[in-house]
Length: 125
Image (cartoon, rainbow, N blue to C red; front, side):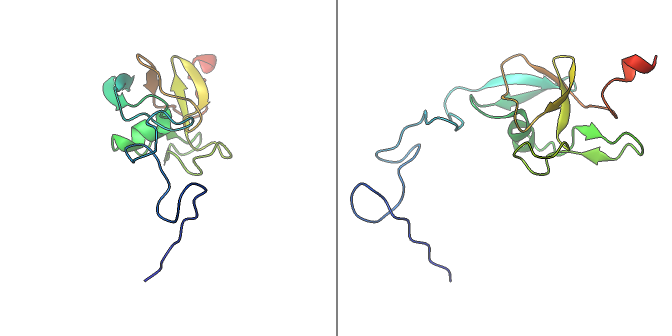
């Protein structure tokens, strides 16, 4: 069994305060608020998201693991690194292709679609 000790600056030992814990706040910067959520659409289906949540995180929470296909073979891709270093999580957001879904915050009413290939099929027509 592995034991992990968390050192805190206030008080003695224990856990770090956070949302839903004494001394924590539900609206911490950089975290999703577990309060009121909203919906955006993904390929025409509603997806529930929390304020502050990225599109990739909301899609993962909804059980969607792939929202892009590769250019050459059409293989499915989704989040890989989750921090914006790679480009596996590209999605078309509100008609604009090549958005890294792990970096783009979900907003009420957004329209997210699976990105096929390079996301610019309209240029080849």
